[in-house]
Figure 1 (tube, rainbow, N blue to C red):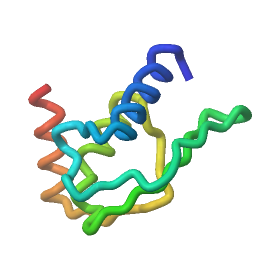
Figure 2: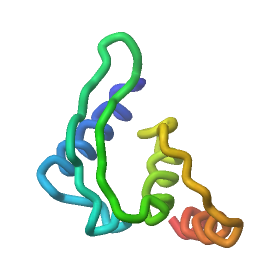
Figure 3: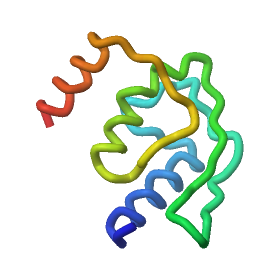
Amino acid sequence: MSPPVMKGVTDFLGKLREGVKPHNLPEDLKLLAGPWLSNEEAKVYFVFEIDDPTKTYEAFAERVAEGLFLRRKLTLVQNWAGARSFAAHLNGK
Protein backbone atom coordinates (compact mmCIF):
# COMPACT_ATOMS: atom_id res chain seq x y z
CA MET A 1 0.00 0.00 0.00
CA SER A 2 1.48 3.32 -1.04
CA PRO A 3 1.79 6.17 1.50
CA PRO A 4 -0.89 8.32 -0.24
CA VAL A 5 -3.37 5.40 -0.25
CA MET A 6 -2.62 4.64 3.41
CA LYS A 7 -3.19 8.30 4.28
CA GLY A 8 -6.50 8.19 2.40
CA VAL A 9 -7.57 5.09 4.33
CA THR A 10 -6.68 6.53 7.73
CA ASP A 11 -8.35 9.87 6.91
CA PHE A 12 -11.52 8.10 5.71
CA LEU A 13 -11.72 5.83 8.76
CA GLY A 14 -10.84 8.63 11.17
CA LYS A 15 -13.70 10.73 9.84
CA LEU A 16 -16.09 7.78 10.15
CA ARG A 17 -15.06 7.36 13.81
CA GLU A 18 -15.99 11.03 14.34
CA GLY A 19 -19.34 10.54 12.60
CA VAL A 20 -18.35 12.46 9.45
CA LYS A 21 -19.54 10.52 6.40
CA PRO A 22 -18.92 11.11 2.70
CA HIS A 23 -21.96 12.36 0.81
CA ASN A 24 -22.77 8.93 -0.63
CA LEU A 25 -22.99 6.95 2.61
CA PRO A 26 -26.47 6.49 4.10
CA GLU A 27 -27.38 8.24 7.34
CA ASP A 28 -28.18 4.94 9.09
CA LEU A 29 -24.64 3.56 8.61
CA LYS A 30 -22.98 3.11 12.01
CA LEU A 31 -19.38 2.11 12.66
CA LEU A 32 -19.71 -0.32 15.58
CA ALA A 33 -16.13 -1.50 16.00
CA GLY A 34 -12.69 -0.98 14.58
CA PRO A 35 -10.70 -0.17 12.70
CA TRP A 36 -8.21 -2.89 13.42
CA LEU A 37 -5.10 -2.68 11.26
CA SER A 38 -3.02 -5.73 10.43
CA ASN A 39 0.73 -5.38 10.76
CA GLU A 40 1.27 -8.43 8.51
CA GLU A 41 -0.93 -7.58 5.53
CA ALA A 42 -2.55 -4.50 4.00
CA LYS A 43 -5.80 -5.15 5.84
CA VAL A 44 -8.20 -3.14 7.92
CA TYR A 45 -11.13 -4.72 9.73
CA PHE A 46 -14.18 -2.89 10.97
CA VAL A 47 -17.79 -3.68 11.75
CA PHE A 48 -20.68 -1.62 10.38
CA GLU A 49 -24.39 -1.78 10.99
CA ILE A 50 -26.81 -0.67 8.30
CA ASP A 51 -30.42 -1.46 7.49
CA ASP A 52 -29.94 -1.83 3.72
CA PRO A 53 -26.33 -2.53 2.64
CA THR A 54 -27.22 -2.07 -1.03
CA LYS A 55 -27.23 1.68 -0.31
CA THR A 56 -23.44 1.50 0.17
CA TYR A 57 -22.69 0.10 -3.30
CA GLU A 58 -21.76 3.44 -4.86
CA ALA A 59 -19.62 4.57 -1.92
CA PHE A 60 -17.78 1.23 -1.73
CA ALA A 61 -17.18 1.03 -5.49
CA GLU A 62 -15.90 4.61 -5.51
CA ARG A 63 -13.38 3.72 -2.79
CA VAL A 64 -12.31 0.65 -4.81
CA ALA A 65 -11.75 2.91 -7.86
CA GLU A 66 -9.63 5.24 -5.68
CA GLY A 67 -7.54 2.30 -4.42
CA LEU A 68 -8.65 2.66 -0.78
CA PHE A 69 -10.59 -0.62 -0.64
CA LEU A 70 -9.85 -3.88 -2.39
CA ARG A 71 -12.68 -6.11 -1.23
CA ARG A 72 -15.06 -6.84 1.59
CA LYS A 73 -16.68 -9.95 3.04
CA LEU A 74 -20.23 -8.82 2.32
CA THR A 75 -21.07 -9.41 -1.32
CA LEU A 76 -23.90 -7.21 -2.44
CA VAL A 77 -26.27 -8.12 -5.22
CA GLN A 78 -26.57 -5.21 -7.62
CA ASN A 79 -28.59 -5.19 -10.81
CA TRP A 80 -27.26 -3.95 -14.16
CA ALA A 81 -29.18 -0.68 -13.89
CA GLY A 82 -27.35 0.05 -10.63
CA ALA A 83 -23.98 -0.84 -12.18
CA ARG A 84 -24.69 1.45 -15.17
CA SER A 85 -25.73 4.22 -12.80
CA PHE A 86 -22.43 3.91 -10.94
CA ALA A 87 -20.45 3.89 -14.22
CA ALA A 88 -22.20 7.14 -15.18
CA HIS A 89 -21.32 8.56 -11.74
CA LEU A 90 -17.61 7.76 -12.26
CA ASN A 91 -17.64 9.19 -15.81
CA GLY A 92 -18.97 12.46 -14.39
CA LYS A 93 -15.96 12.87 -12.06
